[in-house]
Structures are given as structure tokens and as C-alpha cells.
Image 1: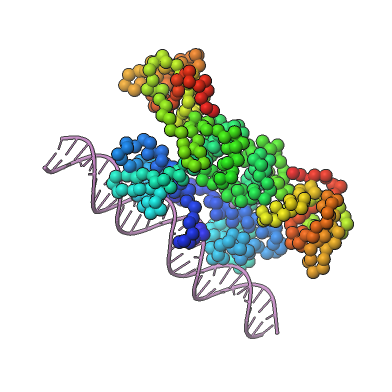
Image 2 (image 1 turned 135 degrees about the vertical axis):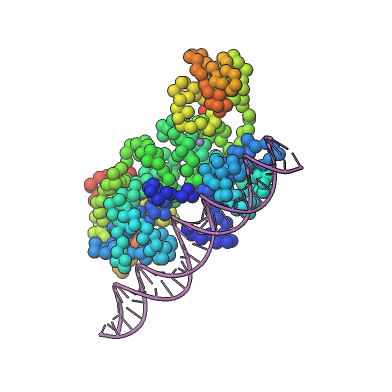
Length: 239
Length: 239
DNA sequence: ACTAAAAATTAGCCTAGACTAAACATTAAA
DNA sequence: TTTAATGTTTAGTCTAGGCTAATTTTTAGT
Ligand SMILES: [Mn+2]
Ligand SMILES: [Mn+2]
Ligand SMILES: [Mn+2]
Ligand SMILES: [Mn+2]
């Protein structure tokens, strides 16, 4: 590696960017009075807890995070900016692969997870413009703008809905390729009209109707990942 | 980094791939009885000679090259295969950026130099098919096929031509973005019809006519990088 | 044939970013 | 309130891939 001189500011590495991105994602799942935990980062990044501690020290030195030992970690503005850039790169690339190169929604994440770190601003910008400046990716997740602002409208999950109220699928979070393929196979896509008929007790499976057709039993955890808007609001919310 | 276990074969790193690619490129400039020199690799890769020696040892251990100390280095079949894959990735990406995202030929190399290492086979294949399975990149360089075979037709350079014989530009090798922009600015593109009117002595500049229009003085070294076919052979050879 | 220059290697060092094992701090349970 | 479990940090290692300085080998010039 070309040794980065002490004075010249070197670009953040792939590792740093992934840490910052995951911290961002875990922040939203963290109670407001706590920071993101070392353990959770270690788990998501598939790395030892000691490695996380070690990296957090470096990120804190560069003022990308605030790290209070034993309390947890929070992004600073500059750290958040880098995280948002990764998410923007990721989601625009995923959108492009689906729209222009025939990828399906279960294939894009793997590709994007690596490439997000190596796409130039120019390339991301050109893909985004070529697509008509989309605001959401193929999973319905919002694309941050170039300044790092992101839509943050909380949408209810299928598992938390009143029964017999029609809704439309607006976003599907964090599912594995296998699960995404399964959803597609039962006809559940972004924009699908869903009616929850019933939920079995003890966090049991949901019974749902998809586009007025067949009933399907859907695992409770899957229902947590599927976020919806009221059916009347927008017929096909983003895409 | 996830420690690669001793038994599981790990993918070659970016550094290894760049070494193999540059070795491939230097092989064609090396006399048949010699190997590629450490010094030349160090220069092209912008690393120290000691670093090269060090890496060559590792590449030789994996049987990607044959390294005879003080003599030089040659690719093995498996090393060449990796080199060709990088060149294929690089050239297909460059082609795609020009054809689909409005890049000009001077902008693509920087992007491709990094991304070549991170593109999946699937993505490269889809870009290639989307483009209609091109055989040459935007600089006229041949694209290796998936098995690593590459067209190897030696084309004469402008600097070595008979005067007053019309030719067409078929390939432009290894020029900087600045030089490529200059060539475009004087109307010299792939497929341009050129007549060399004169060459000043002592490797002096060439006097050339471009598409029957104005005369331009062209530096001898630039003329070495511009390769041509006879004007009658194909009107617009690849592109 | 001898010597000087060029090229290559060796030896020793460094940083990034992993790891394990052990020590320490906090929280939850008894 | 003491203890056990959980989470975090520290200490010490390791590999990849760089570096410089010193040494060795080859090549070229006289
Ligand atoms: Mn994704
Ligand atoms: Mn990533
Ligand atoms: Mn190139
Ligand atoms: Mn490269």
C-alpha cells in the first residue's frame, strides 16, 4: 500500500465505510439514550468484538463517530455524510442493475455491497440521471440525495396492521436473496395490494391476501420486514 | 480482513491482479529470450523494486508466474488467465461507460482501473451482451473472450508508415486523458482516415492529414501509440 | 579483463485490519 | 447486595503489502 502521508488526507477505506454504514443502520434501531453497541457491530460485520473496539478508536480519532467507552457509539455529521454516500451509491447501483441490466431484486445486493465503495461520484451521478433521478431503490428504500439527506417516513410493517384493511407494499427491508425470491414467487412485489386477514397468536404467521387473489401464510418475521402504505394513498408508491 | 484459511483457496487480491495484468502487458514488449524485469514492473506499478521482488515470490509460489531470479518473469497459463480476465473486465466496462453512460474515451480508464477487480462475472457478462458482444473497446483494443483468448493481430503504428499512403485509425494505446482529449480535439478518432505526409528526421514530429482536412504536426511518441489498418480494409474497423 | 553502473535480492521495518485470550465493567438475577 | 452473565477493552499476534538501506549479481564500457 502506498503509505499515506501524515498530512495528506487519504480517502476512507472500504472497511471504514462499511463500519460507518452499519453504525448508521443500527442507530435507527437503538434507543435514543444509548449508542450503538460494539457487540452488534461485531455481529453485523462478522468480525470480532476486539476488532470493532480497535476500529472505533480510529474512527473516533478522525471525528467520524463519538465513542464513549461502555456506552456506545454515535455518528458525527462527517461520519454520517460518508454513511449516506455509501447508501446512495448502493441504492443507485441496485436500481441501475435492475432497470438497465435485467437483474432481479434478489441479485443486486451482493454486487452493490462491494461496488458501493469503488464507484466514482461521476458514475453514480450518471446512473442516477440515466434512471431519471429516482428517489427509491428496487426494494422501496429511499435514496439519499447528494447532500446526504434522506426521506425518513416510518411506514408500518405488515405484522402491525389492523386486519382486513387493504394496503400496498412500499418497502421490503433486509431480506436474503432466498426470501426475496420466495416473495416474488407468491406474487408479492412493491406495489402489491395486501389485505391481512388474520395473525396467529404468539407472533404466529400472518394470513394475507395478495392482489385480491390467493391467501398465503407469511412468517411473522417476514411480515416485520414488509412495510406498507394505505392502499388509497398511491397506487404504486415509488419504483 | 477475514483470515483466509490455509486450505480454502481465496480469490486473488487486487494487488495480485494488477501485477499479473502488468506482467502480461510487459511480456509483449519483452524480447522472447528474456523475462519481464523487476525494474519495469516497479516502474509501471509505482512501487519499489523490493516490493516487486517480494510479490513475485508469492505469485511464483501460487504458480501464477515463473520467476527465475535475475532473469525475469513469465506468466503461467493460470496467471495469464487471471490477467486476461482483468483485461476483459476493464475493456468491457470501458465500452459500456462510453456506449451507455455518455463517457468519453479519455474518462473511462481511471474508472476501469479500479472497478475491473470488483465486477462479478455476471455483471461483466450482462454488460457485454447488452452491448451486443463487442470485440473491441473504445480505444480499439481487442476484448478477450471468456476463455481468455485474445485477438493478437499486430498493427503498424503511424510512426512506421510509408508516406502518402492512406490508412484508418484502428487502435490507440495507453495515452493519458490529456493526450486523448487532444487527439479528439483535432478530429482524430477510431476510424479516422489518415495520410502521413512527412516525418521530420531524428524521430521528429509527423505531418499528417486527418479525414482529408487540415494538416497537423504530431509528436513522434504519439504516432507510436496510434495503430492503423490500410484504408481500404474496413471503413470503420471496430468500434 | 577490469571496473562502474544498473538491476535484483535480502534484511529489517511499518501500517491496516484482522484474530484470540484475558482482564475489566456493567447489568440482571437471586 | 452479592453473584453470574453479558458486554467491552486491553494485550499480544498475524498476514498483506508496502517501504528503505545494504548487499549481491549481472551487464556494459573501457
Ligand atoms: Mn442492498
Ligand atoms: Mn460494503
Ligand atoms: Mn483502459
Ligand atoms: Mn487495476
